[in-house]
Image (cartoon, rainbow, N blue to C red; front, side, top):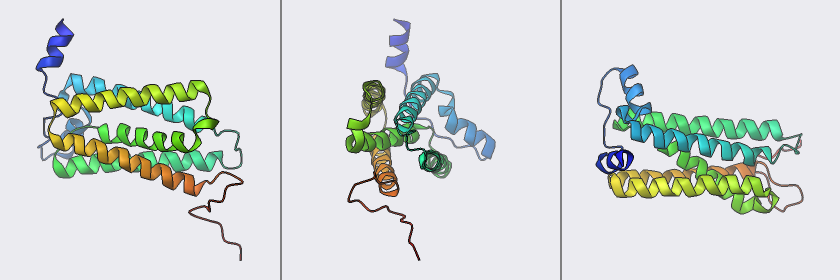
Length: 187
């Protein structure tokens, strides 16, 4: 009952980070301005989506010649999205990490749609669980937060899907008609 009361009375993701000190701003951004509810929801989702994404990536470990490149590409994309989230919040004064886990879900969703038959049931179940929990969190924030939060979540999902498309173009499956985005030209 106490948890339900806290959930019903909390106002998630409404705090702005207005400090002029960089360290305090970063702390505010990464801690949702000390909102325990938002910290719990968002860092749990980050962990779940990262684990799901790792399982999807690990499904490609048989591609020994390109697995390191694929892991580096995905790690770079993740760092890029995380950097975007932090810079966005530094500029706008917002708080949070939800763009990161939404982009991961968008990325994984694009990969699963395009390569789903190659995933084991366990990996697909991990992805589906992460996606469903993320959808639930997005719905929760759509009801309890300002509309701009929902717009940001939708944009992050689309950003992730775009990154998924770029990733698949960069690493086409052997035997497909698709040309790599960054093809190796022979002189």
